[in-house]
Image (cartoon, rainbow, N blue to C red; front, side, top):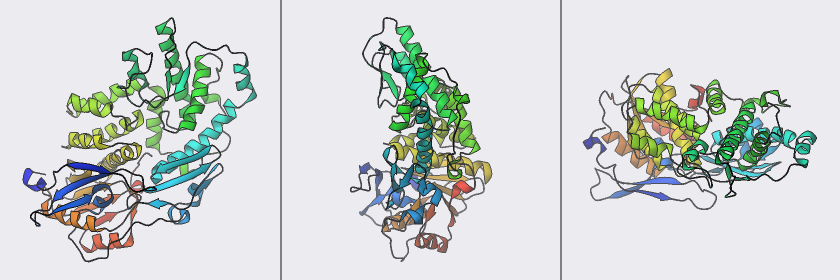
Length: 448
């Protein structure tokens, strides 16, 4: 998009928190609408922009309403052997917010993809507790003397956050690991560093065995992985993860795709520092500026798994311009839910590029992505659960359709979403010539 086409979009960004129970941080963009001189319209980008690129209409606007679990989820995801999703499902016009009661305590997640991931993690916690609660495992600790290095949970998520008592250069080896050391000093720094590496290695092996993310924010999962990691590092537990029996199943709805499995294999075999090197090399090949690459890879909202998937997705959109702009926009994420959004939109572009037709350019309007395709259509990929028709969406869509111009654009817009739209939203879009594709994850792989 040229300067003229982008006029009216660039303004200061603000953040706003929803009322209690709607706690997803949304990006707000103040826009000046060209055909309404002097008037400023506050547009809710992440909840409204999904209905982008249509002319204003007279349809009744909708207000997001909570929904029943049965209306939203298949039965095998709504309830498992060790958990159940509570009523109601909170809807914000963009994502669903789930409260989950489990044998291991309550959990809250934003997004159906995040719920699928949590369901597998709850199953994995049950499997891991069969090990850490077993007689043979507990006996190994019975007479163990207190070690000079004590491992504790911590919230460090990026290399820039130095682990207490660990050399600065080693900190990057443990980006987003859930363990760190206290200030208790070991006489041999080399010995302590080696022990940390061993803990991480054991944790990654067991996480891979149960197909879960070793860098997950799930504290209960991390506690179980920590126990095994420390026992392995101390030589108290030598059983290979591959030899551990798996009783039961995570369920068909939680089965992982080949794409997810490929990422899990990298996470198992490579420490965080090596994953960072892989991402740095790919970003360099995309001609992303070193400073931008560093800011993204250091970003606290993204785990090594997030980094791996997002960078890999952009790298596969070979030849497209604007990938650096997308990476820069992704820096706006302030939490895991927003990081998931940018990761999933990147996967949607990759999937479209590989299965539908080449993407040649990417234009960012704050958090909104418009991908120009070689066929001429403008693709708007949007990761959502359920989108509704709102006044803000209507106004923004009118402005976007009037102003979006790109080389090769044929005037057609395609809105691809990971979930679904309300009947009203879909009807309005289709009546105005929009192509709407729902459940994009059925067209190509999107890793949760």
